[in-house]
Image (tube, rainbow over all chains, first blue to last red; front, side, top):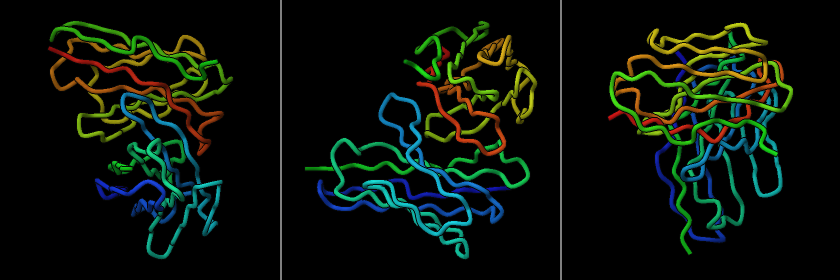
Length: 112
Length: 113
């Protein structure tokens, strides 16, 4: 079945860039998403990328998609303490695009 | 204005009890979902409904029964609660399913004692 992997932790200094990585197994995924979960809160959609795109930029966020390696990354420029949260990547299942498969989540810690 | 809301936010109950979690969305979406997030933050879909019709039913014990009285509401009823049911349950909705972006509620933290 589909599997989405992420590293568990990332620690960066305020003002630096953060890069959160994700690998997935379903090469037929149509959409890939990044969600943010702050402590005690729900999931907030950050951005998404369609599978025929290589890159998408949205203000401080840059998503890179390498379909050959099934690798997705989220870069946060000028990381702030308010960016501290858990970041989940997710893919849609190829034969059921209604079903989101979530990664294990990366806990981003931003220190001053 | 809250887009996807859930009640209650916290639910603490004894093993063996029956409880319900309610979800409402005011986005005019046709599709709604229930997800479970365990203590390790792993998120997995449980159910999805499109316009009151069950679409996705993952391998979930039949003690869990979703009910959709109308397309703006999807409630989750759990019978005979077990310790392993302790988790955060998230409701979500999307415009028409089929890859449309899913918007999540704030979650309900269920603790079974």
